[in-house]
Length: 203
Ligand code: NI
Image (cartoon, rainbow, N blue to C red; front, side, top):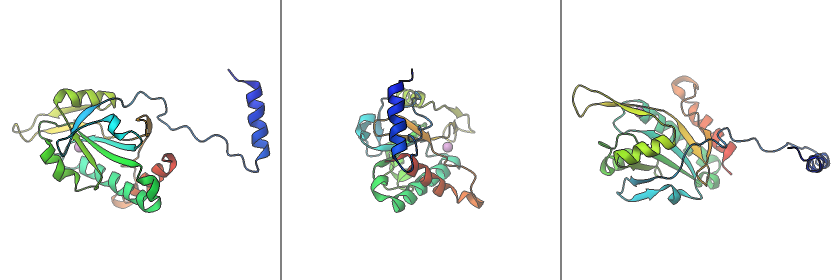
């Protein structure tokens, strides 16, 4: 219901400003039921919950370290984009924690994730867990994954949703980050696009 007196007050406020830009744009994922509570295990073997990231924006990506091509490329762009934003706005960039959540907990042990995560960004938090814990957090983030039978028991692939979420400091979803947007040749435009999105939503 529109409150008339409030509308008039806003109109007068706008009229009193030389350039009224209107309210800030609504984040595209505002109000979406994405995210929620989790407790998983990081690459140091320490249990971590969503509440440990309170006060931090989060870039959240689900994948697996044995992924032959897609995950490393996505994580590389996500990391390059964050590095670009770190150069532009170091204070705001420091408020962002990049998070990788494994959809292949059988092979992605903490020991494996230590080596994997350090290839990308020094602050990348890599998380794994039990099959049930991973299924639960994936469902909360609307991420689907399934094991693709391989030629032997150890060499399987995992098909998975390929999204980078930006979450706010309370763990609510803000936007999907266009990590693989077509850029110029070899996708070299991607880090700049990512940095621009971070600049748009991170305060
Ligand atoms: Ni992958």
